[in-house]
Picture 1 (cartoon, helix red, strand yellow):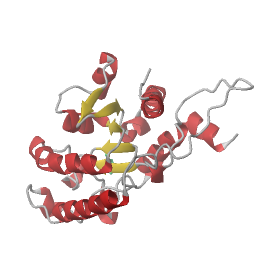
Picture 2: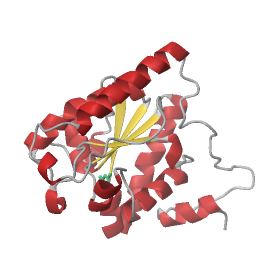
Picture 3: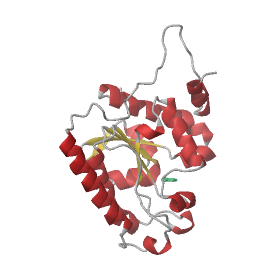
Picture 4: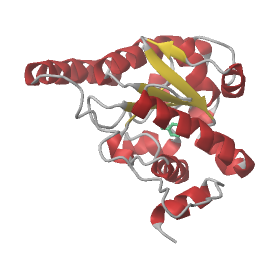
Length: 233
Ligand code: URA
């Protein structure tokens, strides 16, 4: 079994492969090489991102700065065609300053690989930049303080599609009370700052409820179609 088939199996997807129809990874669809950005824009964007990083690292707007070990800003290429938004750093992420380390991150990597992306081609950030103590749910006030940072990241990363993982990411990005499932069922693709947002289950939920993986794979596939064709149909 090849690597991709293994990842698809892990996502609960049964492959029916015809002799001449393959599902190939698309080299470079994650990295924004095709964005028409000139070098001076990139340098300026680098500086803006560095300034934003400093603002996050020194932020004391909510109580989370008292319990964090470090801030977790985000990782990935800038610009990037696909941006992932999760909820908040875990204990291990807080120690390392990197989002999605550990089992949840491994499943996220498998999910991305199953639609032809590599983790390193994608920009990954969270709705919250600091870990809530004991991994409790983020408070509305904490999300409200962090939201401007996320919006500025989106502006600088210039993604073509955002994949929102779980309810907190969806609610923070779209300022809605709807769940990923409700958004999916509505059939609409909503946008933030003009960027379409595809909502799906959080990988931590998928680890507990593997039966939801095929549904999640469909969401990821829609994100891929949106990137390639500009339409998720
Ligand atoms: N780690 C993250 O960075 N984000 C999540 O949502 C979960 C774990």
